[in-house]
Image (cartoon, rainbow, N blue to C red; front, side, top):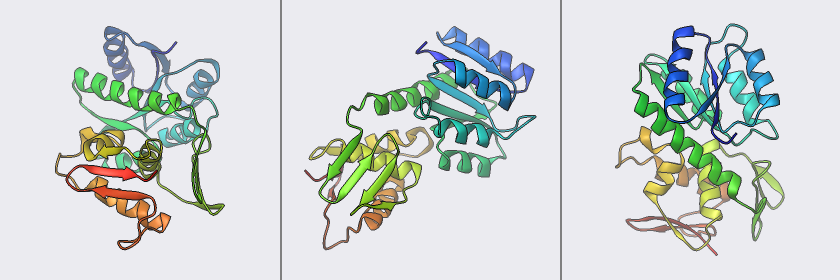
Length: 230
């Protein structure tokens, strides 16, 4: 089922809350209270998204996150991690490991659904791309394996850097607005005037060998955003 969501949560009250909210908005819920049940659900079901509590009785939610991102079938599903107010480091680590977004307890039900739907849209956009490899001169982006090579040498990119480069490279010659890029990497978490996109672009350029004087891949379109060269 395309609307099936795996909820991994060991707290009974929280699980009932997730179930009620998601059912109300048309989602089918698969329940798992520990890591073993999570793995079993992933092995036997088609899942659109996963909501992960990071503290489980038999394993860490980070391990489930890592398992999903390395899974041949489920690696691109939307993933939300559940945190509490004081768990900022856990939130950052979860996002760096590949979570699409997070929800902080206590939360409003409409915020949960909005974040979930936005994450699902982003994950489905990745699945809908037809070309498994994007090639541009000496640069190759393997979408399935999430590997970037330049002159056949692998370049290490963070999850968000890969998503940004993938977005630009899959639209060569097209100007991509900063806000579009921001939405791709979780725009709900940033103010409109944030420089986070520019910082990511700077890091991507450095890794690709672009300099201020010589840009071979990504152009800046002043006041608008960025464009990957054709």
